[in-house]
Image 1 (cartoon, one colour):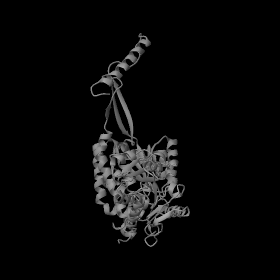
Image 2 (image 1 turned 180 degrees about the vertical axis):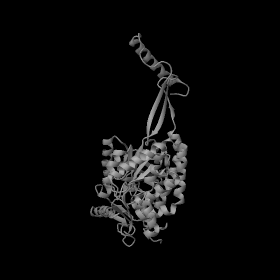
Image 3 (image 1 turned 45 degrees about the vertical axis):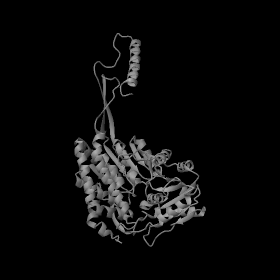
Image 4 (image 1 turned 180 degrees about the horizontal axis):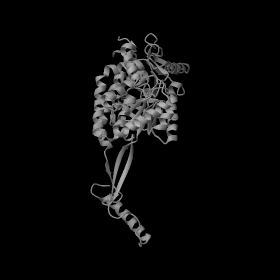
Length: 526
């Protein structure tokens, strides 16, 4: 297997160059970064302050004013160059992502490809979403209405450690195309990934001051960031999301938040058992389960429960846990000690409550200090921690149900609503069941990759899983202020001197009734 070797993966000269990309107004204490695979030191970045955040916002705002004046086609061309730069530096990017997160290389590749897909999508489709659009005026032939989309100003991004490349850069790209400046605050555990990606933005032609990066602790930087920006994008836990949303509300700053999940998979009696087992195993244990849209609960029709359970255990046991920089391991490391402790506590609680560990359930210190086996639980009580709380690790429970109605009810028995999947041989039936699951996205006969790669379709959560959407038209329009301009032909719509208002009122009512009749009966329908 390819070894870790932090110096080889991220040489000292590269670390220093990236460190210098951080916005700061003076010398700062350091924040140490360690490699989950081994616990060795990767490097250090500055612990930025509130003053640094203020400077970053000011620089991004000044650069954004000039950037917004560029034709949108020029901005789109730079996004295509971003995709090219990401692909050209793919080996270095994948190494950096793995070094900081401990994830398997295929999981890191998913991040890279997501950024490329988003850059290409918004470069092609974004200019059309930002174009002025004619709307129906209040009075046909008299009133015209035009909708415009202007940049909000400065977008703040507070991004997590689990997908530090895709969640930073894929969220950032539509904000740039819309004409905004950006201030990015990456997670404490994964700053070098964000800095390396932002350096590639510089190479692609994004003005250097347009994207500012502040590194450090969220409790220090979050509030001053929200105070200075015009839109906030946050990805993280529901508990922190509530705090962030409260701060944004105090400032009347619009926010989009993708938060936690307790995502269900529903396996109907006509599903292909082998395909469902393989797909759910991938959907549950990708990135060692540290994925907001990964599965933690499976509800299986009791008529195929035994066969499915056996197939899922076999699929899970085929997964190789490893800590290397080649493509051999399927499952990598957890990110930190606190994450490992949560996984261990949830499995211990499940055992104490009578659940059976069908496979897994053990720490793998022989592989790495934070590695844990993919784990399948059965007989999990509904009040167990692993049944109610987000584990955010490689733990999956499987429960038999009497049929689709019970499966839907169990799937919806949560405060979360981020992602789900339905497995069936009848795709139309799958869609009908999917429409009854309370989640922002539902995949039929797939884990999550098809949904995640559908950049033209909005993605986000309901309930405690957040507000707002990424991807598609909504993913760029949220970074704009909408202005409507109406024009009136002839005299203004106002009372005429000398004409009784009751006559004007009758005429207005008759006009509205005539307009309604015409809209119902005109060629082509309403």
